[in-house]
Image (cartoon, rainbow, N blue to C red):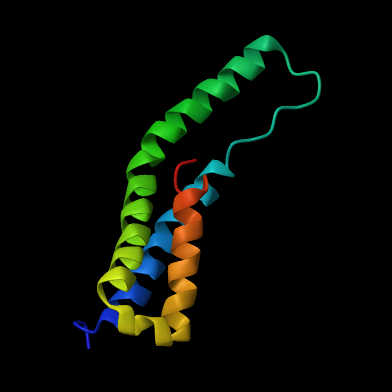
Length: 104
């Protein structure tokens, strides 16, 4: 049932994971600097990173909102504490909200 808080929490967590995963995968496309890279190469990579960060900001925000909704659902529905799958999603969402996973 789509109105079931447990189902909503699991779905919101999955959505947050998707957005966070997209962000991580795209950041991984930046090539690392070679040892002894010139200042020009370093500057170009940094410019690319900043451009990519700006483009990924909406996905980071979407991930953070989804993870926050999981936490809020658990607060609004204390009966969810007896559901192990939901509590795993809540703990992971809390961890992600307090780490750099959603903020870059």
